[in-house]
Amino acid sequence: MLFGFIDPLYLMFALPGFILALIAELMVKGTFAKYDHIAASSGMTGAQAAYRLLQDAGIYDVQIEETHGFLSDHYDPTAKKLRLSPGVFRSQSLSAIGVACHEAGHAIQHKEAYAPLNLRSALVPIAQFSSPVSYFMILAGFLFQSQNLILLGAIFFGAAVLFSLVTLPVEYNASSRAKRLMQSAGIVTSREASSAGAVLNAAFMTYVASAVNSLLILLYYLVRAGVLGGRRD
Image (cartoon, rainbow, N blue to C red):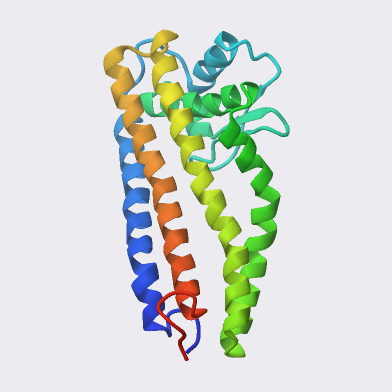
């Protein structure tokens, strides 16, 4: 039976992950919008908040720049640049400050050689290569009815799954740092920190959903390869 929506078994594995990802996406957008209209009493913008955390951590070689897109914020450890979307870079909202401080948390992780971040960085080129290759192998396996090809594709896909799993402690730790440091640095009050933290909690759920979805798809491939549940025709 062909891979994809033609296969009812695929839907059984993929649908829960898809629903979880959809819920997580709605949560992060809704929570961000909720606190996007509430300004921090400090009057700092997201860029200024991130700069404060970097300075307090003794980080002077990371540039903060504005990038395009909605919630496209990220820290680039190779270029040592913290890129913030317009809605975060210029905004004084609690949502913007939460996101900006989270990205600053990644820069602090980099400075401290946080092991999960180093592992994730090492996995980036592997995941970028193995993920597309896995789909070709798995598709070929279904077309030629070869469980060996499906299994080989599943092994390659496993690198992407590993990447999503390693991402979880990296993102959780960055959010934990942000919640603690934004308050101790005087960027937000304790009450404001709770609201800014809610945005980070919602954002973390998107990574959880991604990891769960990847795991479920991997299980599907392993079932179709005959590794789990016995061999299938």
